[in-house]
Amino acid sequence: MAEAGATLTLDTTGSASSATTAVSSLSVKAGAATTAANEIVLAGFGVSQGSATQSWGAPSGFTLINKDDTNPSNELNLSSMVVSASGTYTATQTLTASAWTKGIIATFRASSSSPTPAPTPTPTPTPTPTPTPTPTPTPTPAPTPSPTPSPAALPNFSHVFVIVMENQEITDVIGNPAAPYLNGLATSNALGTQVYAVTHPSLPNYLALAGGSTFGITSDCTTCYVSASNLADQIEAGGKTWKAYLEGMPSPCFVGDAYPYMQKHNPWIYFNDIRTNATRCAADVVPFTQLSSDMANNTVPNFVWITPDMCNDMHDCSIATGDAWLKQQVPAILNSAAYKNGGALFITWDEGNTYAACCTLATGGRVATIVMSPLGKTGFQSSIQETLYSLLRTIEDSWNLPRLGDAGCSCTTTMREYFQ
Image (cartoon, rainbow, N blue to C red; front, side):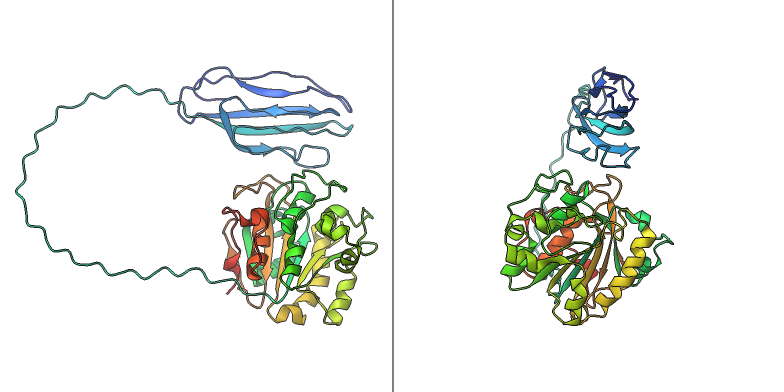
């Protein structure tokens, strides 16, 4: 439907069954010129997707301002790359043999197209009497204002622990009785209520956390390696240590999938300067079982990255399963000297299951982020809009490291408010 005379038509219709294509493309066309400023057009898209690529186009001269994907499940088969770029609404993806029904509602705003108003007659000016001049008073000098103090710096964390869970919106986990442990952590410590993942699917979000960019990657590919600086490089250059602990990983620096370990949840193996340096990779990209021995030997590195396996991270198993895993693992971190003596623990999710967006760069859904630290606030909730890039930036700022990629964007906020 449309306002002010803009008639919408679809260029093609059709039907499909499994492994066939309903239509090769589907576009919305405006049948009449816009006649009102900021005209709004609501368009409905319904498509049965087959094995060929499909695309949707926005009306020419319109800008996408909102959208709702009515079937966001099964992201491997349905398009997870619908973007919100100004002036376009497109999604093109080669699909599997199965046919899937997809419904999309998109809202577009027309470019400025206000009708030219009728000229207003110029009134005859009334003569202004000449006022009697009054003596100019001697101005009283204004006091010099005190400068506004800059926000307090972040604490210099002794250690940072990051646990990345999988594929849940904040509304799926916070307040969910199936997750009593993580809800207790969120209530007792600090919770970010407006934190957004960068995109879909998983891998680009992990790369964003580790490298400040998605590097143009839009899938969960396993050989799309990256030649770029990353947080591990920065940490080492700053004289600190790091390790990534991956649950289910068969051996240090393992390349490939070995379910329930999946490479797409291990960003560090994608960076060439880590993967191709056998000594470095074997020492720092290790199975999760090494964390307990490092804890016991008091050899925990300054930066600890933890990826649970595909079941315990809530990806393939229930929220209750992930909550039980956190209950088993997190107390050891909170009771460690590395945490107690000025450390911090961040628990976040790689992506939600919507396209909720904010902060220019993030369209991957709104995810829970729990922040814990002896230097942090308790019983606190933040409503400041932040992204996964904010988490990277916060670690870098705490350790006075350069900001990588989009962590340095003016649209990225440091997570300062969680700390005392």
